[in-house]
Structures are given as structure tokens and as C-alpha cells.
Amino acid sequence: MPRKTTKTTDTDKGKRQHAAEIEGGVMIRPVPLTRGEQVTITYDGLLSYAGADQVYLHSGFGSNQNWQQVYDHKMVRTARGWETTFEITDGSRLNFCFKDSANNWDNNYGKNWSYEIHEGDL
Image (cartoon, rainbow, N blue to C red; front, side, top):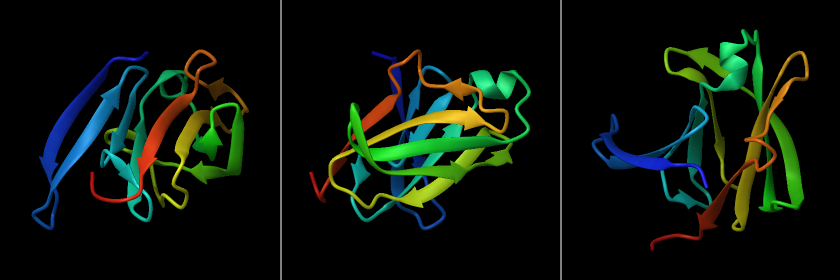
């Protein structure tokens, strides 16, 4: 299991927000993930260091073996790495990996990244 570090940051609206940093150059915020809310994923991993000119977040919902609602999110280069923000539309699990415009993949050594989604307050 990748090492996870949780950070707490202040948003521009004054709310406290937790972010998880995971080995492989991935940060996800806010955590925990909640259905109906926006999530931002930042990637500064293998493809970034290989000089990718464009990175896509390849995501889906459900079990890690049977992804549903699969979509490629075009990421934007920022000072932190490649980022994209989207809404969590399903209440099961978010699974994702990354690819570049040359179809090179970073799938966390075949494990992908996978997060449980919550339906609301814990």
C-alpha cells in the first residue's frame, strides 16, 4: 500500500480542507471523497519526469477490477504538477491512473489508485 500523508489547508472560503499525498507524485483533495462534491487530483509522477507534453487522468467508478463510467480527464499543468477537478458522481469507489499523449501509462505498478467514496457526513 502506498504511503499516505494527510495535510490540512485553508481554502479561499475559510473552510478547512484535508489533502492526501500518496507515493508516486499524487495528491488528492479534499479527503475523504464525498459523492456530489468536487475533487482535485494533482499528478507529478513518472510521466511528468519523462517530459509528457499532456497528461490525462483515466478514471472510473466501482471495483478496481470492473470500472464503470470510465472517462479521460485532460489535466492542466500547474506549479504543483498536472491537475484536474471533477465531480464525484458515484457512491462506490474512485479508481484512476494516468496516461500521456503518447499513450504511455502510469498505473501505480499495476495497482492503480483507488479511494472509497462517502455518501455524506462521517
